[in-house]
Image: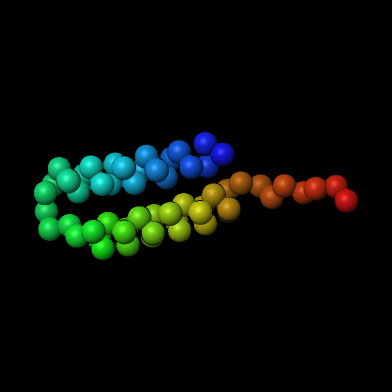
Length: 57
């Protein structure tokens, strides 16, 4: 479970810190939209990369 949650959270934290360091006009809405896009892309990539677990009937 930690493997699934860890990398996206770290990536979001990096994006947030990057925006804060830049100090540019970054609004909360832009950060939320960026976070949603990143999480959605991460979920799709994880679903495509991880092999589907087939359970025996």
